[in-house]
Length: 172
Image (cartoon, rainbow, N blue to C red):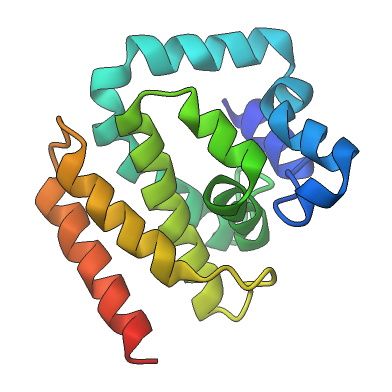
């Protein structure tokens, strides 16, 4: 897993201006396959499918671990806040990222977008929101999605956090 994370960290997607460049759009649409290769992409897809019921419990641990790892004096991965931000912006704003999530279970799509929002919020707090991602529309959309997506075990937690983010953004 560390090898895949490092590969993805070294080759981030390009979340902006993809529709003005056909090569960039194509690259974003096939980002994971291109970077991870066939074997690791198929393995990841299989894990997402077979462990679908456990993903909600796993996401906060993965998010927490990545956030701690990049801050650690001797990180285990090549992840940085900039890398996490690139992926967060990719999933929230790009056609390639949204297309990738549209092919996934709605619960997985919600979780990826939710944690992407948290990452971009962290980057924004560190003045590293380089693409100027407007968090408010994403927080609003996720709040709506949280009410309609069935099977979210932590729905109240998501709703509370999204409300907190929206209120903070509205008072800026």
